[in-house]
Length: 307
Image (spheres, one colour):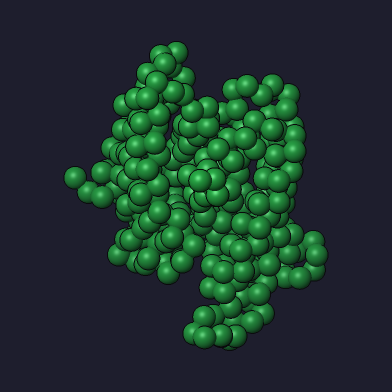
């Protein structure tokens, strides 16, 4: 069994157990949930070597941290129910992870969906650069990069376009950005450029708020998703422009593309998500309470001065 097939097994096991525990009417589901937490965290943890190859420090840290965090959450939930208690924040987190991971993994595993989303992302970035007069670019044909570094048009893809689990190269399914004369700019769009991960986190978090009326949850989605999408269009257009304009710029061995993509853009994205989370906390108190409760184990307790 290859690494991708192994990741698929852990993902399906994790989704099945967390989904069952969240939607089931049974009260005692901690044993099932614990299996789910460990399984889904292993799935993301096994992606760490890929991000090491890409030299992406943010994603390396996030993927490597999933396993110890998943084990800790599973242990926490098991002990809570063992002591005859229930933790609403953990129940919410189960639903949030399930409804975030399910659509994301479906898109990442189905090449047709991946290519469609990447094409949609590339078209908007190019359109923005053209209407602003910054650059006259065009979108190339969808391509795929294989693990040996070779590439081909997606129309010539030999794998299953409805479910493909084999490892691909760094580019995966990508859309090249071309100059007006058809020559390559050296920049391509991949699935990670779509901001799917950022948007799907909010989708799962809001769907899992069982005690909050759907009207408020829909309002939260209306606030977050369009904002993330618009900011991502600006982000992609900015990275393309900076790379084309300052390609020879380097600082401490880091080129402009890597600096803009792996550092500046990610810091900006995390800051934007933080601001949107604050807005959501105001209109969705249940979300705020769940987040605070989950953070309690990380906050040192004050010692009492009483003798």
